[in-house]
Image 1 (spheres, rainbow, N blue to C red):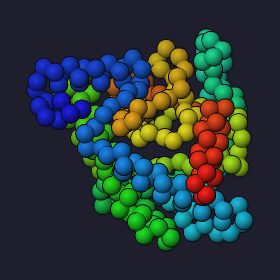
Image 2: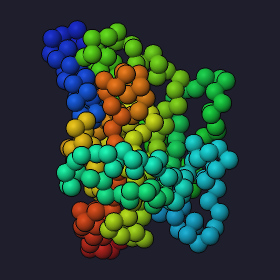
Image 3: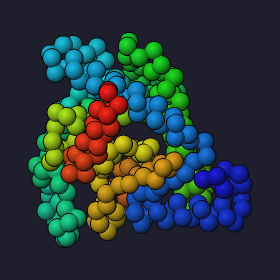
Length: 290
């Protein structure tokens, strides 16, 4: 991305743009490195989200009211507790797939409610008449919330705008083909939280699905469990290198390109790898007396 940001007209930049477009077309996913993104911002954001989900979960499991949960806003702002989000039923598609056993989804054929929490935080301005522009929800116990969420969220949003422009250049269409359509959109920072103590191996945190968005972008997670499918229905466990971002095409990208880019399917499962990473983390915390 740095090459494009310095000089979008150079041959090296055009090659990088072609690579971005090819990755979206062939795989629906790519890893990028954005010089504007500081790994420490990601760590600060994850630290805060881990604390938030632990506190909110403790209250919720005790039957206490969590003020940040807003079903009246269709969970489009604030917290969404576990067992609310339900993936669409893709069982017919799954039955029709002629793929190897190791490439099959682990989530149940008939969707179950996701065992994860989520938080929706708006990024960017919306049109004044947007019907879904609900008020931001700030947890009272976290005075640094807005600063940390905006710091990370706007960096991710900026990265998506640059990637969208690079994709357009790589596809040989006007640079602003995608970015013009993104302005004023419902951009959301939507971290998820999975209770690795309450759940166990095999739990479905996010069943087999695609995202309705144009693109989904992630920083590096602390635990494995995300699996993605490429255009040829090969399944891959995601590992994000330090300092990089993961970008996956959503179904809106598929629609706007007429299928040249496909919305990428993925799932999040509590795997043996997840459990091993969790137990390792707990051992470190115990050794530190935490």
